[in-house]
Image 1: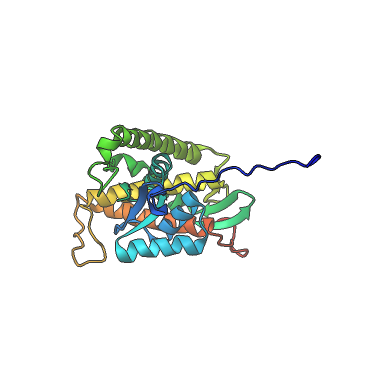
Image 2: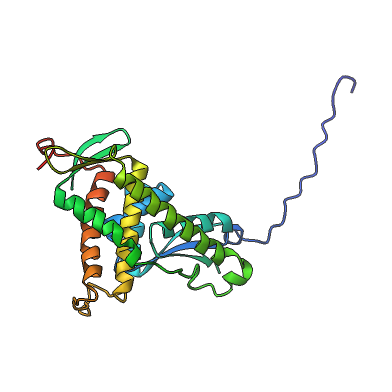
Length: 101
Length: 169
């Protein structure tokens, strides 16, 4: 038909991604461990300062550290996870970098 | 040590003569409690193979940071504009947020160093070490850092100054 434009639909193929969302999540964990030396208000303050968390979230993680022995604070790509560990260590917290299994 | 004024990015504390002496003495104890390097990872044995430079990077960053923070706090405490001796007695300490966090970090570094030198005791358990001539400075530093950190943390977390507090003792 003159004057009409034929619209050609592109072939759409949905990518078959066998990886789960878990597997695509960055694979390094920032973990803070309990110790009997750092004051609880201090730990809360450090979490708020380093991660810019609100008080409730910082206190939740602080309590997890105190009551369960450790808390996973972040799951990130290597560089960012390493940055967080460095920041936490600067405040003398016992933070480590672990690989997410 | 008490908060006497809160401004925009400014905290002003009043210290008695004894508190000022205690704070400066505590800060000088940092040299007695040097901290070693700690492993970057606790559970991931293969992390160092994945990223061989990571531990060295952390150790270097911490060494540089400790030097910077100690120099920064020394400059703060000896700067008469920020740590002012008052004619009527006592001292006035004026900190911005960065200064406050720097002082907090250095005090806590001393606290953790003293605790490590004591053998990393759990003070909540019954295995509290006895105070001896060899370790009394560790206990002293532990108690004093507790006191000063508590005041700084309360101020950083929004404590309001007491309007009735006199400027000096």
